[in-house]
Length: 358
Image (tube, rainbow, N blue to C red; front, side, top):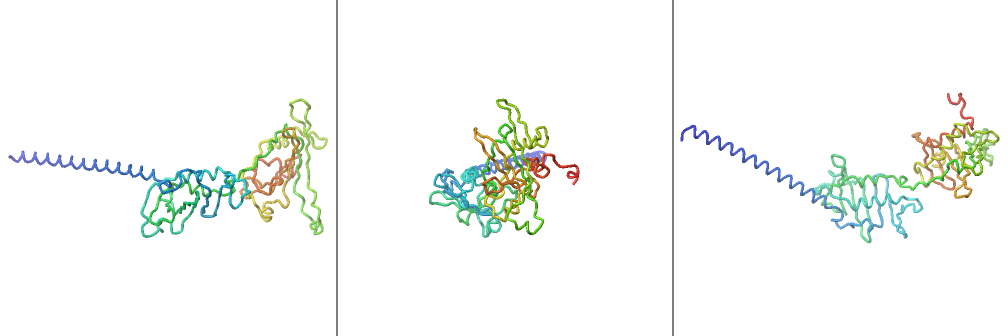
């Protein structure tokens, strides 16, 4: 064999070796991808149900969890309705608890890890949140540690088993972070459309006592009051005429703003459902900034709606309010009470130019 032939054979062997190596790399990559997909499918299919938890969300009868700042407990009452265990009279929106239970039932393990020698690396030595769910006579307990690097998942231990750590989505922990008053079923205000209105009375804040004698007096100081009466045309579908005493104020922009606000007014959120006397005073209800009384008809029956308006909220987004015979404190958006507050301070004339400049 000549040296040219030997060189040709060597080149061909090198090419063949390179192709073989490339094939090994390709097959290795294919194997790794298939293995990762299989592991993902296996871990994705595994969840609480595979660990003995009920697969039916309706099997749960109690739920208790600590979200890092508060402990909340919920239970089914004798009628099968979810209640807040610490406040059975609280108007709980059941859908918030049902969503948590459904999320718990469908919780999947994104990854399963050996716990290792220490729980500290996963934040499970001092869990950031815990949950206990009761179904029948059994309980399912979860402890959540730190978030994963991407912040979208949590490390979790289950049923006190320290030998295994799971990685799960952050969906359940986020739901657990909802404050209890955000779960409140808000009261619906009556239909205060203009056609239903008969009279509107607005009272401003009572003047502060000027002398110790006035402060000690039993009677409450007289509040500035504006009374507006509607005159509806008999048998005609026409807007009412509005009068303050004998003055026709129908065309007043301030009145039209008030009528619009009454029609669209809605409770924004619950601030404190079981407020202490001190909390009520802080929110301005020892001497409300305004009291609204509306006489209206509903279903052919005369009705009365009363609203007490307290101080502005710290973020200036609205005001604290209370409904008659309802001790809870709610929030109304600023836009819902602008006209009301203007009338309570300055009457139907509105603020003067000097007051506006102030």
